[in-house]
Length: 89
Image 1 (cartoon, one colour):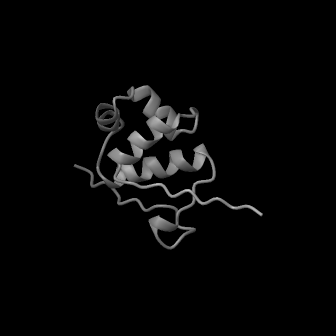
Image 2 (cartoon, rainbow, N blue to C red):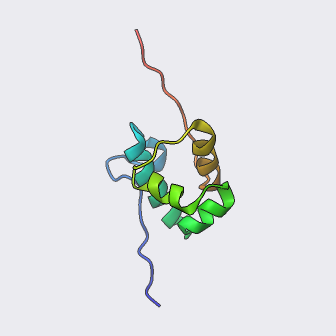
Image 3 (tube, rainbow, N blue to C red):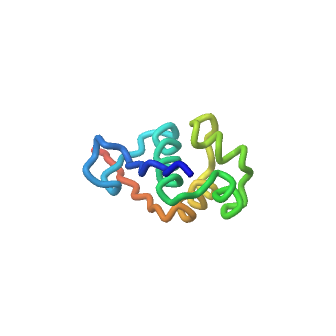
């Protein structure tokens, strides 16, 4: 059996906590990497979130935008957190 290569989050940042998500494309890439780090399949994420496997795949490929409830469900299953930083005047 081929050994799965360990994937790391965005190398532009020092730690996963520093990884910045600026759009759904970023979120999709990071979610896919994290899912693989955990040894999970898209089917696992779909089952645990109640989302369809098709939707999970589309989110990872940045073809689908999701509402906050679905986004939070994915973050929960992948044991990730989201911090919102508001910049203004």
